[in-house]
Image (cartoon, rainbow, N blue to C red; front, top):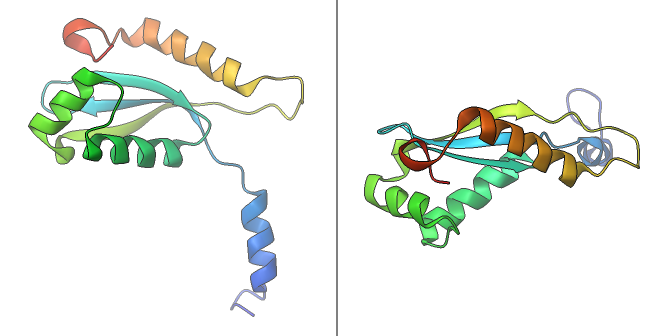
Length: 118
């Protein structure tokens, strides 16, 4: 048993019950302020995936990939813009809701041209 009295089985079950935090995020270039905006059901997984793609030279956004390669990883930060609060209602399409939220922030942040990678 752990010091808090929980067994390994209890800890595993608690982990399974945790819901990942997701929503709208931005990857920001610290040198020029350019933004890449996206949405995801899990912030941690999205950042891990983006870093893997960028480090491997495989990111689908060519402009972001080119600047990541030119500037280096430590010139970029992953920032949560807003968290999406999931509804417990089975009727809610979370992916659709995330895309709507992303579109709203794309309109607000305008990460186009010299301001971004879109």
